[in-house]
Image (tube, rainbow, N blue to C red; front, side):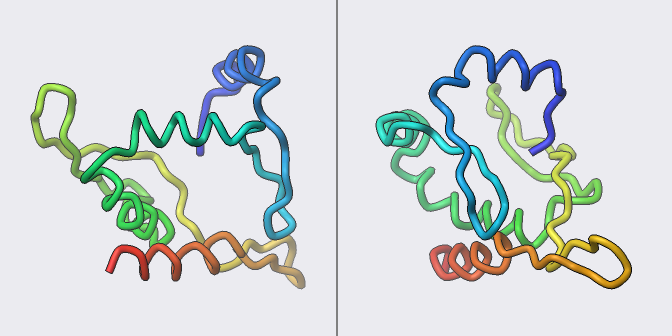
Length: 120
């Protein structure tokens, strides 16, 4: 996810005590410290019909459907259907470290099949 560094510093200063850094497929990722945060977020933001759209949205993310300036359709808070650039980076199968070495994008390689299966 892209974020302004100044915004990240403010967020981290406010909730940094509730975040931990874990390893996932050899890459450091941030995660909530308590399971209660995850459950609270699911209760608040993932209800009813919304739950079925998450695997589809994650599949679109890993496939890069809305990367490189492709505008994603959504409904804004006024109920209007509009299209905007979501500013997400493309998810390649591997990242080139140098000319001889590449690192596989394990997050895509494991997440994409899972989300495609769940969205079917």
